[in-house]
Length: 480
Image (cartoon, rainbow, N blue to C red; front, top):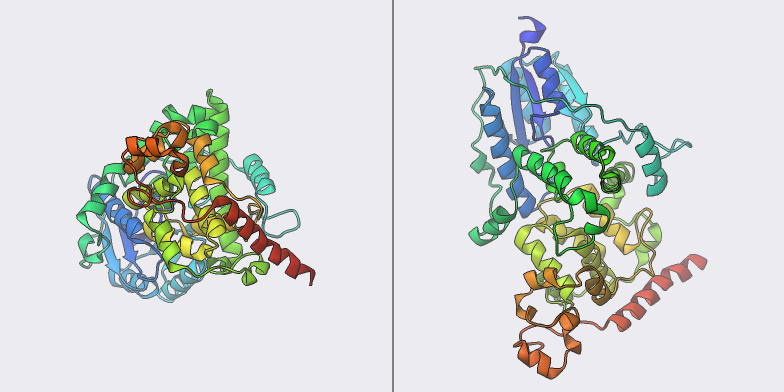
């Protein structure tokens, strides 16, 4: 049997697409029979919302493969044993994969490669998950970047997307494949029908949904993105984050399309969006080079930060019952749809770690479980940024005032009214601080504070003073 006649296993992980998929494209160009495989490895970190998305995305990928004469083989178990066993069983000539960069992933890939090489089976790794390879993209001194601005300048001037490759028109699949699992056997969908309906109503997982979301963004909100992205009451962002996380559209395609739009007239919007793609890469680079930040602060001085252990306060934050409408609207949007507007994410996260002094890791865990776009690097890096403990982090004295954030970015109250029906009848001037409304205004809106909607669980001025004192204690300890 010629080398090109031996089947090639294409390992799908976070590249659940056919367009611009280097691992798949290389197998097709070699003329080899292709075995598309997904392996559910239980230790992979995920939450219920992102598991639902994965289920839908895998179903979409399998349907797309079927139109090209192929199908997705679904397996479960430790990849370091499952993939070598499959490869030897079918007489594979090679394994193709898109490189991962999370902690432990490179070692796992190397382990699989070593096991395959013992049977004369090659492993080919392809780039595709990030814009720049963290092992090669470094500062002039040879170290990893820890500040975003120089990272972005180097990336913006050095990256060329090229033209994304089309999807294969037809794939040849071997007939001697073992039986795989039905998608439902993975048990990815465990939530209630009501919760699933919330996700279903807001999202279209899969490659077709990703390409539609990208086209809709470029044709619409991108032109006004620098301003529109901060207004949660309107559609001003791309909402591509879950599609990018699961690789339903390649990061190279997103860059290419946005860069073309920038040249074509939407320059400010295109450039601002490209910068956000750069921030996504920056987070992945930080996690790659500093894997301890999964559960430790990057800045070691935060090891002694005086976090409060307050389960009741954490629960009120999770339930959207803090008494601050912008925060509560965001937390309810998160629970209902698996997503939260980025401006509101910053405010809600800041409220947890600075108003309530609850450890950022508790917030990170909650977001991990609730977000359809949960991404380990982005989630961890952004939480540490808000807490002040990460790289290039927000300064400790930057404490968002939820009322001012609401009146500035949700001036007409469209966002709060959508998610907090119980206070929707309040006039705009009191919507973001109902406790200041006269009794007659509250009565006219049918609101009794602490019955229909909670009073603030903590006073902003008090919380700010307490947070500044806690952060100051770190500064003082550095001097000792």
